[in-house]
Amino acid sequence: MASHKSAEKRIRQTERRRARNVSLKSGVKTKIKDVLKAVKAKDREASQTAFAKAIPAIAKASSKGVLHKRTASRKISRLTQNVNHLLNT
Image (cartoon, rainbow, N blue to C red; front, side):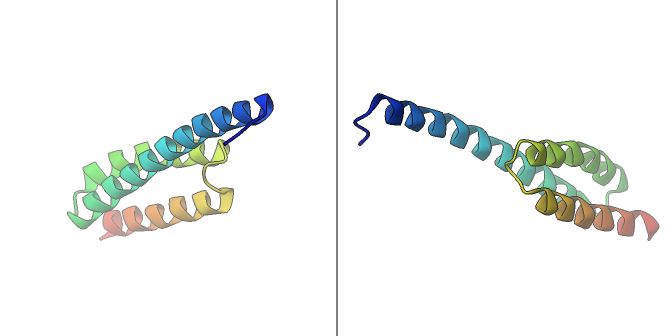
């Protein structure tokens, strides 16, 4: 366990950041699952609305450093492909 005042503060900061990161990452995963579920059900409207909610969540997680920018870009790209494929069929 930490024995210095600065180390104890660092532990508190790390825990706060970890909780924030876990929450953001979980939210992103949920929104991605919503899009994929709507695409699988072939529900065009639901997939578009879920997609519109997922993109800002992914972008925010990327800007906060929870997701790497290329990971965020890849996730957005793949979701876009799925939704566009559904809309074009």
